[in-house]
Length: 462
Image (cartoon, rainbow, N blue to C red):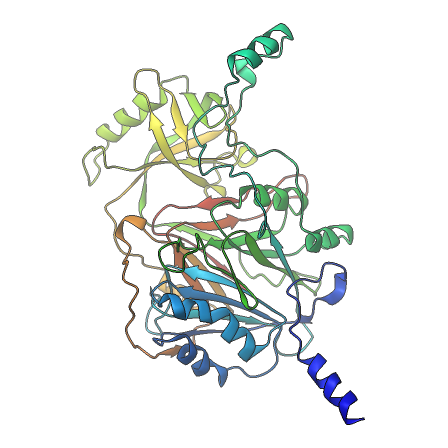
């Protein structure tokens, strides 16, 4: 009898799996709870300092950790936190900096923790965890290919010409993502049961593009918000350091789908995007000729020559130079000049003679689409809107840092602060953030994108 009791007790301590791909309603439905932030110098001290601040049971834990901890400390975080808190799911990653200040909206050394699934069951969220591309190989759609076209070799091209299939006008960017729209098993179950989450929170490596296209195809009205983990090959020995329960992963995507269990969405505002370091150059223009991610004409004119002349004619704070970074604001096809739906991509190159201008995007540009030129100002400090801390709710705040001006030190000050009063969860990464505001109506597809403009931010109030 005693042996049976001990066996039952032992089995109850077995770690629960991160994913439940067979049972649709394995997710729990409790409301969002709290955010916690700590700046202690060691992993154990930071986590232990927060344990007493957690009021009860929970289901979901999202953890962002600054890269300023030592490699040993970073390796310890997921396993130690998961053992201490025992959530149903833990997801997270190493980032450049996290939210750390109780006096202002600032980012630095420490950890930022989001806990979901506390409180009463009324007015609740449903949480579904998922992951993608954490094992095996996959094609990198952007890393090595943006701005080039895929030209067949001579033999293949000759055969295509004979079959009347060789048509330069049909060429697309080699970075264009094939429309396969595959979903992981966890999200297939949501789709099959007509469940459309209010929000997908994503933690990814630098190749989320195909997965984002799949989410936009199957869940066009859902919002998407996420962060690209910092590059950590010289810190942890992994390209990226993503957390999945007790484990640290080197690649892939982990995330949580938030679905309101009430008749109306519990998301209180639209995603707010702010590009602090960018300044517009002139009025919007229409694309009159393009192929793939290459612009050939804007308003019937040479786009590169147009950019240079506009920049020189305007009274800007800085002079034209090779170091100036230029960006293109791309308006949504169906919403003309709606600034709230603007997508910003870097201008990779331009030829003043030929006029061709290459844009850093995996999506094919379209004739008739409106765009505007932008440039990056001399800007070196991230400042978030201080009014964000006055909102009644939980703010998810993600931002991009400047990889050229990162503090590469791995040692950290022993600040030993705990921040719980502002309900802000957030972090900054030099690799960018994921933004998807969702389609406005059911007849549209959402357009999610990766913003890697330094000192840009996205926030969402829950």
